[in-house]
Image (cartoon, rainbow, N blue to C red; front, side, top):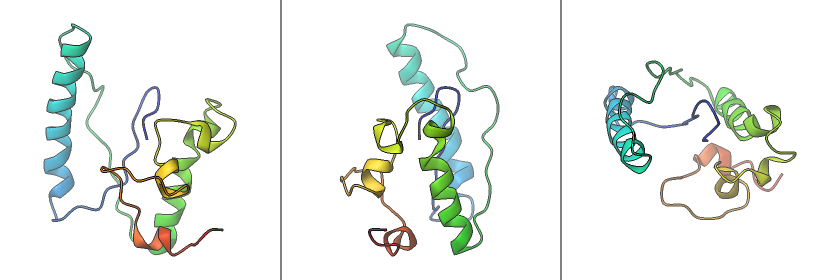
Length: 112
């Protein structure tokens, strides 16, 4: 989820150190892309990424809801489906995106 001042990523790593390896890589690649696009130099991120272990099915679903509703809570949109930079269209509306794969526990919730 791309917000105005931060990003939410819900990622299941393939290894114990997967996130710690991925995030600096994403930072280097995206910052280079962003700086080239906007003809700027320097850092883009304010601080190191923050991460939290999701240790239960219940907490996973809470995190999904928290992320999907972030633009609504921030008064950026009235409804989650109105925000274009989110996974809502994939997770709830079933639109296929290469970078997003809904977790099987989320899909088990059905259409409710």
